Structure formats: structure tokens, C-alpha cells
Image (cartoon, rainbow over all chains, first blue to last red; front, top):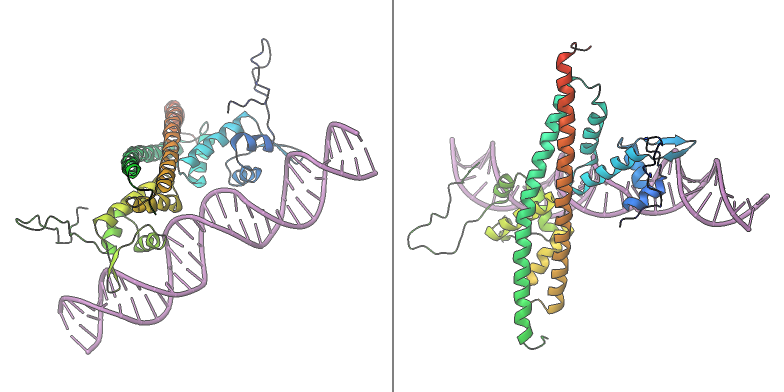
Length: 150
Length: 150
DNA sequence: CAAGCACTTTACGTTAACGTAAACCTCGGC
DNA sequence: GCCGAGGTTTACGTTAACGTAAAGTGCTTG
């Protein structure tokens, strides 16, 4: 963790404020512990849109952040389609019309409700785990006194 | 909701304390908003083991609780295989040997770590949503002053 | 007793999210 | 000039988690 490929933008003095760090597909893949195939697939699904130099994909900060958010969404059980829905609207935001924005707000509220339920689920699951664990420990303890089984 | 197929145990006076409420597959399905197919599939995957009367499945409280936990696990992104792993060990607990119990504790710790990461993910995602939402509201606001667009 | 409804088994179909294999380019180094 | 490391496209394969359709069983109700 805390891996840093030896090249933080270095907030240099008079330099350009534009972050010019770029990444290859392999770099991103290792960084997030996914395969290049996965990254290409996400692009194919409209979640990423890296630039090209010739045939080769070039990823910028924006792309990296997107990938990060995408993977986070996945860990929370959102489908790629759902994630794309938000991503696309977010992109269209600046010139988005009111109806689109309203739709976006709806979607966000939806995701939020989802998160709430998950929070509750996590709490409950946590208790279940506590319960199972304590039972397991009890049994283990009770085994200590008995003959070494079969 | 609150559907009751006219057969609550009726906490009768001197009755048996054993909860004898049973459910048909259809009842459970409606109760949890899944299809009977799903419930049969879970059984096939070793997550449920209802009794039979003739050919027909009869679900008891224990089965209902299991289904509930299974669905909760699913909402948290666990695979049926993972869920089964815990369920099986839980069942085997009473006569489980020490090694099995240790394994169970490992699995539980694993799940717990998973939940922790999800909690963090939820927090982060929540902020993202807040951010996107506030931007969207800003844009919406700025649209109020402008001409009604195309 | 026929109809209907809820249950059953068997089996093939479907979708999402990639994995995997083949065949190709391209670039820096020896 | 060739070689290996990484990149590319195309396309078929795979797995999980059910959906769906067909064909049969069993009860109870008009």
C-alpha cells in the first residue's frame, strides 16, 4: 500500500497547474489489482474514455479517478450499468437540461437509499457474526476440557 | 403486507411452547419478494433444507431465518458459495472439531474485514453523492435565470 | 368430476462480467 | 536485425444466479 510510482505531480513553483501525469493500462491494472482486460471492458461499457497515442491507450488523472469510483461502486454491489448511468449524467451535467438533472437527483436519491439499507444490513450482519463467533468460542472452550475427540 | 394466511399459531392458553408456524414456498416467496424458483435454487445450493410432506416443501422458522440471512448476505455482495460456507460450518458447530471451529473463526474475521471495507466505501460514496448532488443543484439553480433553452 | 390453483421436477436459456487464446504491432536495447 | 515486454483487436469460453417453459401431482371447490 501507499505505493507511489516515484512520480507525484510535484506541486512545483511557477509550473503549469495542469496535472500531466499519465498512466499505461498496465500501471492502472496493477495499481487497482485488476487485469487490463477488465479496464478495457469498462471502456467498452462506456465507463472510461482514455485518449490514444497511435493505438495505445493513455490514461489521465480523470480516468484513474473514474476507475477508482467504478471499483468502489462494484464493491458495493452496483452493476456496471448503474454506475454508467451516473457517470454519463455527471458528464452531461454542465450543459444538462433541467429534466436530466432532475433525473440525476432521482438516481442519486435511489443510490443513497441503497446505501442506507446496506448500512443497516451491515449492522445486522455484524451482530450475527458476533453471535456466531461467540458461540464458536464457547464450543472451542468446552472442547479444551474433553478428550481429544475421535 | 402484514398478510397472514389465516393461520397464526394463536398463542393459545395452555398450548405447546414450540413455534409450529410453517410456510409454503409461495408464502416465503411473497414475504421476501423473491420467486419460488430462487428459493428452490438456494436449497439446491445447500442453503436451505426444508422438510417435506409428500412432495411438498414445508418451511419452518429456522428456514425462514436462513433465507433472511441469505438474502441479507446477498445484498452485501456475498456469493451463495460464501454464504453456504458459513451456514454449513454453523450447522456443524455443536460437534465440530477444533480445526473446523478455527476455520470458522477465520472465515468470520474475513467477512468482518469485508464489512469494514464496505463501511468505508459507503462513507466515501456518500460524500461523492453529496458532491454530485450539490453540483447538480447548482447547475439547476443557474438554469432558473436563463432562457428556457432549446 | 372437472376445473383451477399451488406445488413439483427436468432441462434448456439468459445475463453480467469478465477470462483466455490467437495473432498482430511497436519500441528500446543488445 | 531480432527479441522480449508491453500494448492492441477479435472472438469464443466461463461462471453465478437465476428465468422460463413443459409436463406432471394433489387438493378442494363449485
